[in-house]
Length: 209
Image (tube, rainbow, N blue to C red; front, side):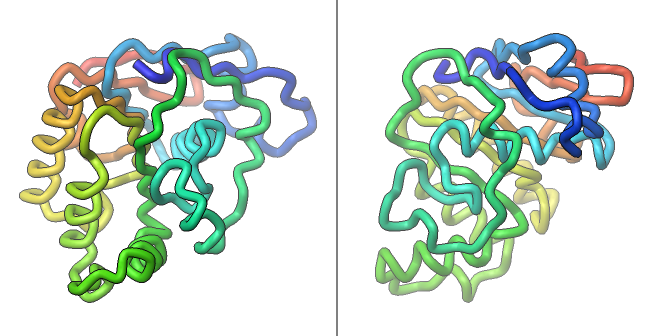
């Protein structure tokens, strides 16, 4: 796997991030170990799932707005707020691959609009429904071994499309992909052999769906 642990080091005690359960627990225990090709982060709103996923993505080299990994032509095209947690994270594992994609539900429309412009797409995905455009861009990006980080990918997807995405992820894992996903969806939690990590006020623990 490309990332086997996420370590939080040196974060200041007075930072607002300390209020997030995931930050408090990582600061106390040091590292979150990733033991499977698919890691699902679950928990209530406010636990810090999305904050952690975004920070891992930025630390790995993605643009904070989402999009392809290490695509210099794309980088900076979509306005976003840079992760303030990323600078405190250290990622351990193999070298980060050249291929990958960071999906953020809140910036997806802007991201695919820029991608279509750069690719001179004949059928712009911004004219598709949200679910259609998500499935289209992921089918294009999830080829070969790569690092794929998704923040609530189920947003705007029907149950059928969520099931289709689960199948696509399972196939991508067989091609060497690694996934780190923040989700609320029980359907996403059914991804075969996924490690499900629950974040609560009491701590961070692996759970079974």
